[in-house]
Length: 589
Image 1 (cartoon, rainbow, N blue to C red):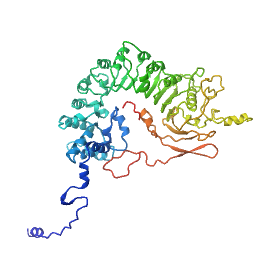
Image 2 (image 1 turned 60 degrees about the horizontal axis):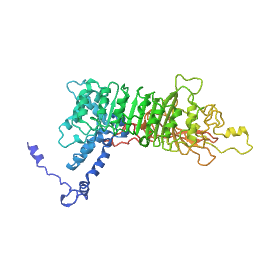
Image 3 (image 1 turned 135 degrees about the horizontal axis):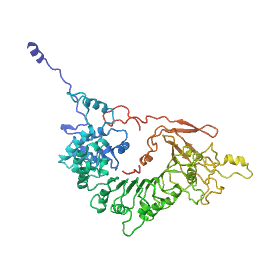
Image 4 (image 1 turned 90 degrees about the vertical axis):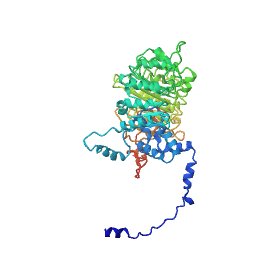
């Protein structure tokens, strides 16, 4: 006890008092910066909070898996944590931060940062009674917490929810929790739903009843085989009259009812039809007893063999449909590449065009086929491959790419910026642009060497009987103009039949008359990034580029470009101080 009294009576050392910071005003008033923040208007605060958590501004009609590609190199869960911390600063910040936080809700299963390894290890050791127990499903636990928050809501947070995205396994196994979340969000526009709901599966009847009763402002819905009766309910105009995106797949129903359903959706602007042989040209014909087709901005057709160019031309006969159509995708349909120009002639506002098909015969060169001509087309996906029934001893697809090449060189697509083909040598054939005619008295052999459209099988992938690049050919259409060259720079993505990777090349037109053009040809690395329309916007497209330099005698030498830190796992936007890795018209938002 003596020692304790002696230690207690020890004198304390004097503490140095630091001077008051200049940021603090006298008399203990808050700093000037806090006063300025307090005066910020609410819309400006919400704009700032949107940069703290970018995924809260995701308003696309895509699933949780597809929309995660456009997020960037950030961790969405860490961003959401930072936004929740902002809501705890003051009452004013809580109101505006909650408006941003509950606008577009995204439930992720993992952190996209090193924090996930730490949390995963903690979840394994959470149970002291049984250390070998399976870790909890984090996405399911987060969905339950969200249902509790929205159910006990007293600040109107549930009314702000317009987009709800959940992982695939979560929405397939947590249907009751998803139904409880839908019950308290009447302003919901898009929600990730299980596949059984699109086919009228009995296990999804309760969830579907909740959506029909509590979410009248839904903007996207899908109907698959077995949901014909549910699709027929749309014709009554009692549910989901504001649908903007509609997907139809493997349906077997009366074309008249389908026409009435489409006519009862005035806000519809995107339609996707897949695996429907009953979908033919008769659906587009005018009828006094049926409502007309609504003017759409996106039309996607997959595996509809009875749809031909005649039906699309009949649909584009009206001026309102011509001005509205911006995206057209044709995959394994009855539209032949030789009839593509007829569609372009009645689609003056078309910007994105996709044609993916297999052919068994050569291009009909003996017909009066017009070259492709469009003053609005910017992105062109032209994938023509040879069918299994085609002649293996002849190049069936060469004539189709010759037709495309002649259309490009004739200047029929002046605004085209990106081109996707399944010919690995297509970009090389565009380097040799048209040269002026040789002088009088020239040697025929020399003219062949200088003629950019004289190719053999070893130098260019052109067919020997090319009716489009040889005006003197007897099979050449008289309407095709002589090649003049590319009007502007063109980005070409090419891929062979046995290749899994895309090659990027940028073809430059000649700077002066009589000069050759140039091309930069990279080396392929990634096999992902160009599988849908959204990847068309990304110029990189998941491929590594190279620079092509001249070798001194007319050839080219590819030199790989330094990556510069590209790639790698996305890092967290908060809580990581290390070096971060550097780094469309959407189809069906």
